[in-house]
Figure (cartoon, rainbow, N blue to C red):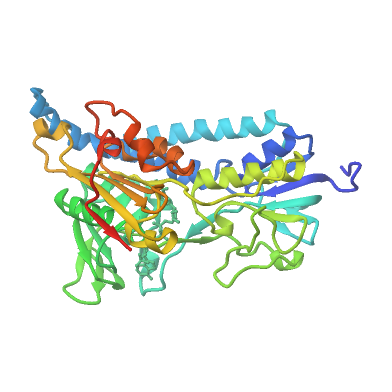
Length: 456
Ligand code: NDP
């Protein structure tokens, strides 16, 4: 297969997830001969066992409240019934469709796909199944995998990977963790009818997020009926005749049917043979890269969760695209990870971009905080006690809006739009000059006039 470079490929990508597929397609578009390998299913975590199926389950879970809320608007909703197998079947069909779309994207771009695990056999050599291929450049895009702490009986627990394929909806489920995945799945199982206990070692959910977001989400989880055990650790999981018993560091054990750990993810580097190519791996397992995604070995780059910079799909896609443009397109595109918006698809959901109130002065000096907390209009008739939050963090000296935090219906959609303003460095005055859309929740972000407090 060797071409004019003396290698089989100009670029070989290990891992066909969001970052790897984007890099492969763009590089091929720039004229490179590209190979890619995938040991699981093309599409990666996001498409196959992450963002996409998760969001479908979030939609499913929300119907429980929609049926209840409809009554306040004059609707009589008859008895409702939920079928987990029907939902999983529909979800699987959609994931199969997307998998096909990804396969087609690769073949249309002329990328050679190897549906095998790839490992380094040397600096330019990759073993893919039984074949050995060589490439001038190699991109590692192997993503991450769930990490579970080493507690006795943890083998009885599942991670989010398995949660998407349970045969039945567990009647009682314990979720360990207090971040993205834990909060999203607590909302999913609770909405679908499981009795959910969420166990988190911290004092408020979503560590690292803005303090008001943490407070509102912690309150709302409880209000929705999730049993939240804060400041607790699980010491053991014990299998009994009546279910799985969780032994906690204090208080009585709890009995559930399913235990799901959402205690973080680690870079997928195990068995990859990076040492054979001389690639530096940090103590926590991530591949060290510079802002052009280059590793310690010049011709080997890495993008996405395996580099653990900002572990979000759109970031991996951006990194993959920037890599391909830089190396094969003749445009040097370093990746800037400042002001990356993100969302937690909890119930209610969170959208956020920029600095949390607690961190802002550290980055930009004195700040003014604008805050509005209110009952969304829909709930005046639905009767639901659910609070929404809109918050701006403004650097006092420059008047630049450096943080937006939203909790409530459509928060991720709202913040995606406003993130353009924050990334562009717009000032509070620009927000003030923008006329709101009435009646919306998001209009609060352009109508808040007086800071509720200041720091610095
Ligand atoms: P995170 O790394 O965000 O959080 C891990 C959670 O587990 C924290 O609450 C942490 O507690 C807790 N934890 C860690 N170690 C232990 C332990 N030994 N015992 C008890 N609790 C522990 O992980 P997630 O699994 O939620 O998410 C993984 C990644 O996936 C994130 O980086 C996120 O970026 C991404 N993701 C993004 C989503 C989105 O954009 N909507 C959705 C899902 C995932 P503490 O806070 O005290 O450290």
